[in-house]
Length: 573
Image (cartoon, rainbow, N blue to C red; front, side, top):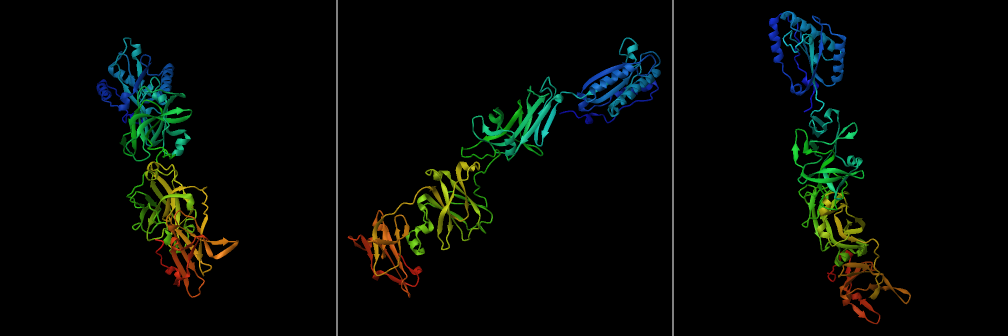
């Protein structure tokens, strides 16, 4: 780990003063031998210098001051501790020399204090004539200054929130770590990645999802450094860990970073405060833990995740037996307990001829542009409650619409009489949501509960129907005539026919069909003040006048009712 200067200063600075008797030398020497050092000091680089004194003098010479000053200036930013020791030659008594060596040490120490705040980092020792280093006497009249220095090349830890890079010393040899510049940052948003021109594609053009992206770089005086050994790097997680993430390295392609898969699995390492992926990495630049997307349909631009497959156990989810899923916005229904989703594959919820007759409506009344819709099925949400004006997210399995080129949802609404009406409220799939797009088509639809699934051709024109027969209602004028085709369940209002340039009030148009036996006619007449008349009949069962190409309904077949709601139908079934 990198050295901390403050932590390496000894709490007990040993300053030995006023030892006048030679017998105290042994105690001083033992004190020196028993001094302990922190790990940082033990491992520190050491350097030393000596300054010399004249015989029997303890005055620091100018050249000695200059020498001490030069060394302190050289090492001032790296000094962990200083040790100053005084010495003499062997002339004189032991007691005298012990005192003289103390004075010499103090002279140097007092000068050191003028060079900066080094007092708390200094130790003072004196040995008299005990340590004769040189054969000649002159150089033994000296003070020795020992420097404990912080190593320029040291273990270095760089952090950016939960991201870490640990650089061992000698990683960038010969450039030393203290002289190097390090940069570390991590990315957790799409905007941050986009701002640094980080692609979401790998080197083969496939899209990725990321769970951690980090940038690390080492440089010296503006030049990038190449590592001699691996950097221990921690990549913080953006989302929860899932199996399948692997380690990717960034590659610059024309100013944009794309990603090369190293094949190394990203294994979760949980620290006290951070969850990270840990790697030994020889390179610098961008690295990431990412996973390839499941399908091309997942074009979600968010690099850190999108919508997953719906949780079928969630409280806001209901789904059909065929796994058509509805996710309801809060407040759509007062209670979802009675809400069910139904795939109406046979479109039984569409109105048949009898239901048209019962409601007294035509197909144009509830589905005017049916010619534009190739509907595959209906999706119905059943509930006793009326839904609020919300948006429901509808999920349709892709496998169920493989036969459709561009599946859409046509959203309907409930008529006050109870049947579903469909206007031109076409909803296309919501794209680029995330992994959900691989398995499902997703639609955001109004929460009406009535939906048609199929293909929509907005340019398709309504087919022109040609008049083929005439229907005559004898003795009854101004009737309303509904004609239904049981083969396709379509019902239309029959208009009055024209013959010899005149509109015939008792004659009505019948359009062509494949089989006359499929046609059913329902006539309503309200010209009588006290009662209403109606008749239902198969067209093929009516009297047919071939010469006039006319079917005839006889008055005697009509039934009386007070209200057309009382009408009963059997022929349309």
